[in-house]
Length: 607
Image (cartoon, rainbow, N blue to C red; front, side):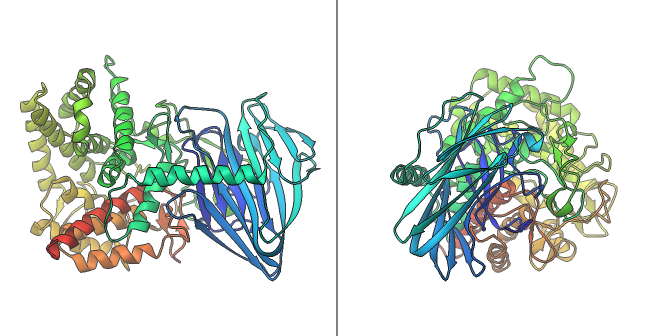
């Protein structure tokens, strides 16, 4: 067991309310329960010695391992190969088909041998509440119970378990064709113990979960060139969506560094308005209308919560998955951080930042989801109009921007572009559905923003649109300008901007967000190329007609996916994945890039 395996050496399993990371060595080193944003139960990825883990794997000095998903599912297989034989651990979590919030969640680990004879070792060392809460252990044969103040955790096995202090160990040797397994269930204190597992029962549950994912993925209408890549991405987005509310979290983890040893370590287990809004287009592109509808309802609910309040902004940048705006940021001083990357933070102080771009993403999502609008309520529309009435007089302010910089507010070009998009899409929606609105005011504000961006957001020195009005720094967020319709994708000013980004932000087809040295963001250290931005670059290239370059960049980016097709936030200087994992923003932008590129290639070939 590596002390800190590479971030990319993991697969993700989940039940649409929480999720676990399983390393390629068979170790569950991240799991929070009962929700994505709950305290951790296993967190060895952030503190090897004290965070807690659940290992189930053979011990053989000459063994190797390989990890894969059952095709088109979230059922993860970790295969171990040694001179003694070939064994597998199959990890999965049964979703609640009703989608109701529950405090009971189950991680199932099937073990089986396909060749020879393999001995598996089990170590289960939970550390509740970010390793801040003590627990008591009860062991009885094949069952054990961990009692913590906030929850109980049942570990039940098809083979004997034994006490190891307040933790549990076990061993089982299986021959070819034999199987067994363990079931780890968290629930409220005093909750009913699950039924003891049997090999047959575990196999039946695996078949049911596999069927769930196959049934869900049949809704996909993607018929493009990269089905495995796109479908893995949409399954990942589904895994990162909290089913009871439809809210999409930014990533399954917290505290994983953008630079190993640095301080850029954030908690991403919340719902960003920006990420969730763009997921609406990604989901609709593939035909997943229910997921897109659920998030748009969640988003409008956030706006309606502000009705009648005269102070503050209509939206904040992020929320908890149940819609709560309370995300106080604090530091876990007792965690050393991934490979010494500290501080490890929970909560996120960026929730209190002013980021005006979120209104553009909100109305972009509503515009993309026009087919959902016949079901929109009158009160929902009133909340939207009040938001745009407010934005018409509130857009011309410095803010912290899309990248949540902590170096002070600026007049970010992208924020102004997105305010333009909010008003532009608002006008379009009002006209399309003949809804009451102050269209004259909205149009006037929209046109003023457009003129301002064209005048102040353009740098003659760089021949490009730039990050903010007071400098010449480039910013990859502006790659969305043609997607939004702000500028034609083959406009000379835009093609010049693309060329400037090629020179300043692109490194062997990978794209940086911006240059922190040229535009200080209030944080120490550097960062890798941003995977989201690389896929936005593909989208922009495709729209500009640079199809050979777009396809090359897209297919080269695929080589940076991990062994099961997942992406973290960034790609580091030596090609390693960095940041929280897997990241929804990366996977939804991959889907958007694939669909745009597919359409452009089809048009080129006359399809």
